[in-house]
Picture 1 (tube, rainbow, N blue to C red):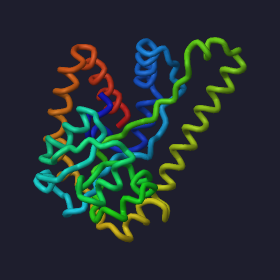
Picture 2: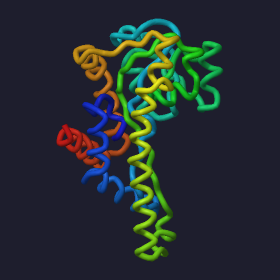
Picture 3: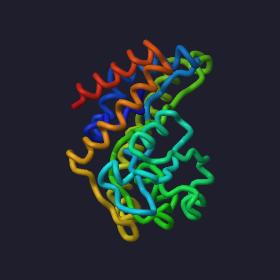
Length: 236
C-alpha cells in the first residue's frame, strides 16, 4: 500500500506519516507477521523520479514504448505499464549495464541513488515525477529486543531515531548539493512536472496500483491502504 503513486504532497508529509499513528500501525503489523520489532522508518533517498535515454517526459504519452527498469514488484511494474511504458525487472547490479547497452531505456530512483550510481553517464533525461517514497524499515529480532534491559532498549531506540533523523537530513542535503541534482543537471536535461501534468500521470497510475492491492491482499490490504491514504491526507 506504500506504493500508491503520487500519494505524498511533499517530503515532510512522509515523516509525519511514518513517525505518527500510521507508522505505529504498520510497525505492529510487521511485528505480528515477521516477529521483527520496528525501530523506525528511514529515508532511502527521497522521492523516486524517472530518467531515460530517449526523450523528455512531460506527459504519459511520452512514456509509451520506453523500457523502464523496475524492481520485481507488481505495483512498481503496474505504475510503468499504466503510463504506457514497458516495465523491465532487473537486479540492481545489472542496471547500469542495461542502461548503457539499451536493454533498458530508463529507470526510477531517488536523486541521491541516481547520482551515486552514476546513471547520468548513461542517461540523458530526468523527469522529477516524485511518484513514490519507499522507506527503509529498521528492524530488530523481537526475541533479542525483549532480552535487553530497559536502559539498553532506550539506547538502541534513541540511536535508531537519531540516525533516521540524520539520514533524512543528509538525503535532503545531498539532493540540493553539488553531489545531487546539481551534478545530474550538468549532463542531463532535467524537467519538473506541473501540478496539472502530474495529475495526468496520477490519474492513470493510481487505479492500476490500487486494483493490485485490493486483489492481492483483500480486505486487509484495502483497510491498510485506506489508513495510509488517510494518514497522508492528515499530514497535508
